Amino acid sequence: MDLVREPLEFQSRAAELRAAGKRLGFVPTMGALHRGHMALVETARQHGEVVAVSVFVNPTQFGPNEDLARYPRTLDSDLEQCRAAGVDLVFAPEAGAMYLPGEQTRVSVGAMANGLCGASRPNHFSGVCTVVSKLFALVGPSTAVFGRKDYQQWKILERMTQDLFLPIRVVSRATEREADGLALSSRNLRLSADARERALGLVKGLSRAQRAFERGVRNADELEGVVRGAIEASGLRVDYASCVDADSLERFDGRTKERALLATAAFADDVRLIDNVVLGEEPPLGVP
Ligand code: PAF
Image (cartoon, rainbow, N blue to C red):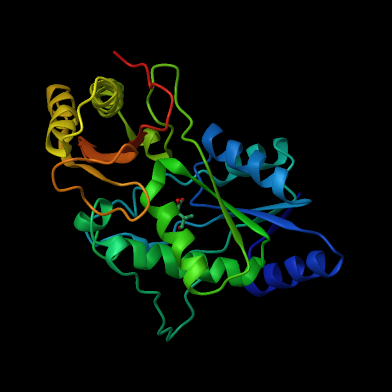
């Protein structure tokens, strides 16, 4: 496995591989890798002969009062996991390397970025789309793989790829969970034992709402209320609980469709966690 730190060197390496006829599967990450990322690597392997992973904590997707400085950085362990998973190429640029001095360019996103996480993180998706387009330009992958825990991110990046005519297939993979249902996330590393327990409020709420949907509840407010109730009862602070169209991400006013995204974000102490379920599509979360 090769580790490359310089963007242009990475671009040349990827170009050489493509020139040798290899299809590249790409998994962009911010590091602090876990089983969920390794599942994305497995999916990338199914789509390409060579798998590249990037590890870069992207400053432009963090707001001024967010956890950029506290975001977990575990490069040695990340490299070990990539090696064990058979990753071919890791790109881990230095902090400033992806934004050149005097840089002027950001990708801006339309209404899909206004709700859900975008409502409380105003420039977040612009930062995500900016860095992902840079990474796509460096790698030139055939396929890029994203986790559905970040459902809004996946949908926005899928749309960006389409809008910019990028010749890249955007593939998603289901959220990986702990045995008790907690969605895997790099930020789980920042949870105290007590906050880890309370964090189950998100999946409990989604699971209860999923059961309500199965019983026939189709009122968006009611489904959102179930999620909020469970999260608040767990002692977390709700950022949002929203029931939206699973493709356009537009909020339902009243009745939901037979397939709907129920997404939530909440704070366990100062750690912001997200989770979601696609009602009418995903198997039962099965959390009491
Ligand atoms: O999901 C993430 O880890 C990040 O948002 C991404 C896609 C690597 C962009 O920085």
